[in-house]
Each structure stands twice: as structure tokens, then as C-alpha cells.
Image (cartoon, rainbow, N blue to C red; front, side):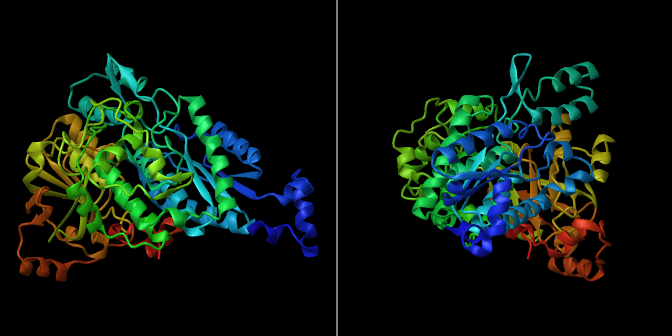
Length: 550
């Protein structure tokens, strides 16, 4: 066992004494030592119940003959961090979490890991840790939040962000806004729609790194969630016995499975960023062209919030991720022989079926013939740009507009709320990329206010969007402005073409004019010059490579 390095031999007498202080008996030291990484905290609604999940995991580990050791991981609530300087930190926290799990695991010679997570950057960080360390590992989510109810309809946190725009536009009053606030987020779990957290928890299941049901069983279904967590504890012990490791599971075929599911359900645009980063840690090259290739042949089968009215509880009732994968397998889009933490994917699909055709459509009757995300290129995005196509209205799929350029999210929000943005504009928010932000802030506030105000505009940024964003919102524009990318050369009044079906993002300027502007461009001073973000900005790569640190 890996843990023998801290358990066996005369030179480990002190180590055994320290384990004794922990109450670990001599006979227990003959068993595998398994880390239980618990991202519980009292600031994230999606994480406030994770103590119970971790306890169930530990029960499974003990039951299967291992010794569990719980230790913490940090986590940031993207929703609470949204719209202020706090939003600079969630994406950089992904690297902090990954590094800290590596430090704890190697520092203590652990034999395996079960990582208890739920929300936006924590789940991809856990998967990155698993890929980097490559010891038997299972990732367990806490499950999605139930949708809130307001005046007979389902609502969620995305509704609340858009409600701010409705309030500013005079469509609702302060009393109604207050009533909605009290209904939007009814309890524990990751926010109820197919936003980044739930998208990544579904990706965990599709990759084979989580137990079946990991992505969709609601957090409020406490019995089912505890049973899943206990199964994860048993599964990691079986993996240790078999020598099954994350890189055996997270193969190219597994990533192809995950991307197909992502396109089929219309996951968050952030999945492109995170899957690329996870693949990097697994030693797999995942070019963005692969996302577009798979999207082109993958039908869009679900209309989940924010692109539709269904929430994760509906997807769970409809058969969950296995039902989606079973349907996509009809087109040969799923590698059924791919390994999972507890078997092979074919075993999960054997009895899978669509139980609510109103939620999961058949491949013969999809919402669209192609997938939920699109990767764009052009003279404005030479490397890439990403848009959640499934959340764009049909009349906005092709859009010509006039650039309104802002060098920060805050300046853009002031202009939007100040009624300076009109139908036909293209709001450009730059210097918010991985380096420029730094930290690649999510732009849910401006997109939600635009949606709430009913404006017919597009929004472009070298930052990124929340999974709760809807509309003609294009992010991840690379190279970013801070690296001298074309988005940094735009001026008010420039004419911009957004052509999602044609996969184009262009400014109507010739090469000579762009070259003239590039020669005159001066890189601005960094927004942050001290602390972690300053170090992060020096090391982080572009969005098209997953914003990993090198």
C-alpha cells in the first residue's frame, strides 16, 4: 500500500505514535488509509449539508475495510461572489483547491480519496486533483437544490438575478422583489438549474468518476444521497483492491462521452474551461475543435433552465444522465465500454430509459439537431470564443450590432442600468480574462440585467459567464485583451457580426486597420499587484487551454 511509507518499519515509530494519538489502533494501520476531502462550509448553500454526506462516505469506507480521514477544502459561492471584486477569486480558487488536495494526499501517504463537493469550481478542482494524483478516487456531489416556487411556477437563483433587471426596468416593485428573494433558493444543494455546478456534477457522472445519480439526485432526497455517498466509500475500496486509478477511467473516450452529454443537455459554457483543465491534468490533449465536432453530431435533447423551464429535479425524474447517455448511444455517440468507478458504462445504461419525454426528448425528435454549446472563431477571436447556443433565442443566432466598449464589468453594469445601452448594441466587456481580471470573472450580473430589462443586445467578453446566463452572450474570447488580443483593439461604433450557426465572431475591420490599432495599443497596468491574484495572473494560461497554471 502507498500508506506503508508512513506506517511500516522502525523509522516509522513516531508516525505510528501520532496515529495512536488520533485513536487509530494498530490493527487499523494494516488497512488502506483513505482521505475524505470535505468541501463543507457555512457560506455556500450547496455545501452546508456536506458533513452528512462525508459521514456516509466514511461509513462506506469503514464497511469495506478501510480507515477514513476527513480533511477540508475551501470553496467560494459564485452567486455571493458575483458582481464585485470577490468574483476575481472563484476560478483561481480551483487551482488552490487542487494544490491543497495534492499537498494533503502526498504529505500523508494516503491510499485513496473520496472527494465531497458540489459547487462551481470545487467539483472541477476535485477532478483535477484525481487526475493529477492518479490514486484510486471517487468524486461525490451533494446534489442539486430543489427549484423554488413563486406564484405557481418554478424559479431559481437565475430568476433572482434577472429580477434585478425587471426591478430596474419598473416591471416589478420592491415588494414583489422581496417575495421572490424569499422563494428563489428554498434549501441546500447546488442551484437548481443546469448552471455550472450541476453541469460539472453531471460531467463527473458522464466521465465515470462519480456513482450513478451523482449529477441529478436532489440534495433534499437525503436518504438517496446518503446511500450514494456510502456506495462511493465502498467503491473507492474496491478500486484500491483492483488498482483502478482515475487515468484508467478518464481516458479520451471518457471525455468524448462527457462532451456528448454536455452537448445533449446544454450544459454551462464553463464546462469547456473545466473539462479542458481536467484533461490537461490527466495528460490528455483536448482541443476546442473536439467540442465543436461532437456538438455538430449531437442532438440537443433537454431544455433545462436557463435555456428552458426544467430543473435538475425534473431531469432526475426523467431518468437522469443514464437515460440521456442511453438515448445518445443510439447514434453511436457513447463509448459504452468506458470504465467507471464501479464497473463499465454499459452496466449503467442497461436498464436506463426516458421516464419523462417532456424533459428528455428522443434523438428522433430533439430540440435541435446540434448540441448546446458552440465554439466560434474569427478576427475578433483568433483562438476561440464560446457561447451557450441552447440559451440563445432563434432571432439572435445571427446578429449584427454596434460595439459599446467597456474596460470592466462595473462600467458596463452602470451603463446598462443607466439606460445607455439600446437595442442593436453589442456590449463588449474586456480586461476581465484570466490575466486581465485577474481571475476571469463571471458576467451574470450584466447578462441577467439585460435579460430582465428585455434588451435585444449581444454581450462579448474575454471573461466568462455563469451557467445561469441566457441570451446572445459570448465569452472566453481568446487571446484576451490583456494579452493584446483583438478584443482589446475594439472601439465604440465598430460593427460586429455574431454568426453562431456559421461559428463566426468578427469585427468589420480590415487587417490593415487592426494592425494599425495593435501597433498603438499599450498594455495597461495590472489591476492587482499583490497577493495570490498577482501571482495567479503571472502563471495563468489562456481560456482556450483551460486557464490552467503553467
